[in-house]
Structure formats: C-alpha cells, structure tokens
Image 1 (spheres, rainbow, N blue to C red):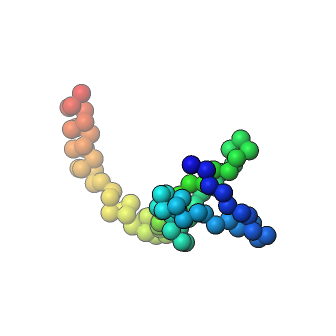
Image 2: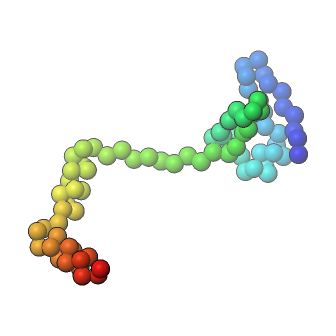
Image 3: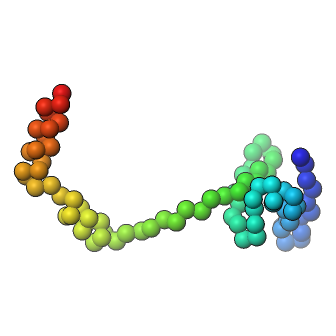
Length: 83
C-alpha cells in the first residue's frame, strides 16, 4: 500500500498513522533509512545496548578463568581419549 508524505523545509516527514500502527512504530522509536536503486527504504530499527569493559575487568575475568596445570592435563586427556 502506497502512502504519501510531504517533506518539510527542514527535511522532516510525518509517517502516516496507519503505516506507523501497522509497523509498530511509535514516537521516539528509531528507524533505518537506506537508499536502494534510487529509492528510500525505511524500516523499524532495533537498538541493542553495548557494554564496554575496562582492560582491568577483562584481565580479572581472564585470571578467574585460567586453568591450573592439573585442570589443563585433565582436559587434554579427556579430549585425546575421545578420538
């Protein structure tokens, strides 16, 4: 279904209510705009929170996960004996 919108002097458009409702787009929701073969494709977007960790945090996790020599030997034996 084609819908018509007018571009304002500031480059803004208002998405028709029927289209927003059908696509589940609400005020403040992010959308993705792509240019494909001379057309503009608009899609609802999904935001994903990304956490950043300090080098100290990563180093602490590495220390906690480090295997002892005995644990390493046991794992090597278990994997070697499976083959």
